[in-house]
Length: 106
Image 1 (cartoon, rainbow, N blue to C red):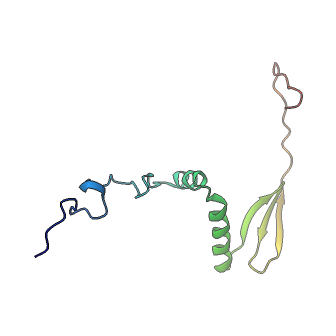
Image 2 (image 1 turned 120 degrees about the vertical axis):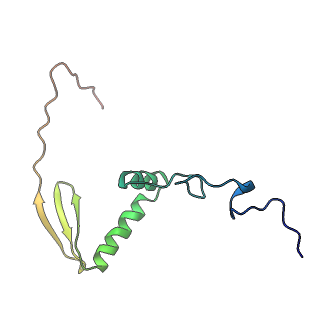
Image 3 (image 1 turned 30 degrees about the vertical axis):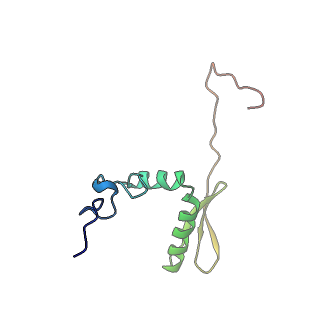
């Protein structure tokens, strides 16, 4: 009969037999619990742009248009490649509050 490994445990894959904390991935990062946490974790890992492109491709495969903002225009891009401007947004008239000075070059 083979001898058991003294470093092994019933929790396979865990170091030194310590169970992993709930909600923690193998890489030590916390598992996102909501949409905001998922977006922040993708941005921190440098994967947010790729995730956005993958979501647009998935929408196009499903036959749905992808809607996004280009400049001040809200644009719908359809799976066949055509783009439709849904609305042009008006520029926001921003007035600097009284008592605030604007720095040159900033």
